[in-house]
Length: 77
Image 1 (cartoon, rainbow, N blue to C red):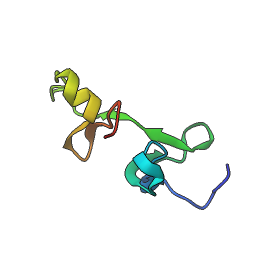
Image 2: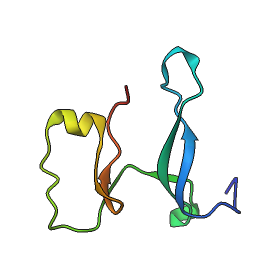
Image 3: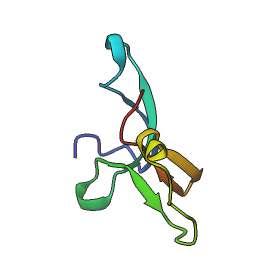
Image 4: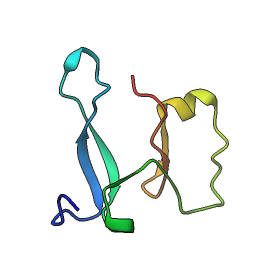
């Protein structure tokens, strides 16, 4: 693991798809334990009673029902 002192949780990461070479950052949930760590959580659904039946646009842009149930999004504008 490159950064063993970093714990799982929300961290800011550089968004390399940012237009114009700007230094954009996104806050993402990182899993630093599973199989050595270093994972970005793109979808989490802890409450299976919540509906993830969303439109294509919502899946493209991402959505968050609460801190434990979200989809990070397929594309960033």
